[in-house]
Image (tube, rainbow, N blue to C red):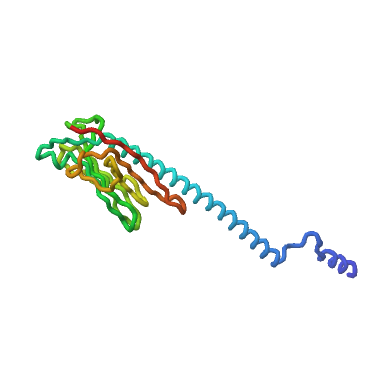
Length: 220
């Protein structure tokens, strides 16, 4: 009996090197895991936001470049007839209006231009009426564009050319100074010597400007 009792006591003793974790150690490990996970997730989402911002910036620059190139091409080919027929007066014109939204320039631009030949079955001419109209939306400026053949009666719907602008400014050079309004019915010559279009966009905390200048010279 005495020998059995001694054996039972030795078997119940635990090896000090194989003891389990205490509750305090588990809580500390869990807290450390939470901190590491939060750091990793924060870094991940920062990288994702950075990538999204960079992608949006690239898309904005692409739209900006496309819009300025289009404006330069269309303004360089602006077309005006000195002797308009009665039914031509509403077509052949060059009009710039000086407007603003909450202090931000929002010029309107309406003119006739020569467009390249297009494919299709409709008997279209090469003379296009183009309208650029800024609209206000949630404190931002949306630049819309309309284009149609001058001899067609259908009125096209405006579509957004660029969104979230900080300004759209059109200036005309009359040979002596830059002005912000123009009307081919009242100005001599009917087309300005040069047209400068400035687009303002937001990049981070700064507002930056990009501009193009064109010289319309096609008159009849």
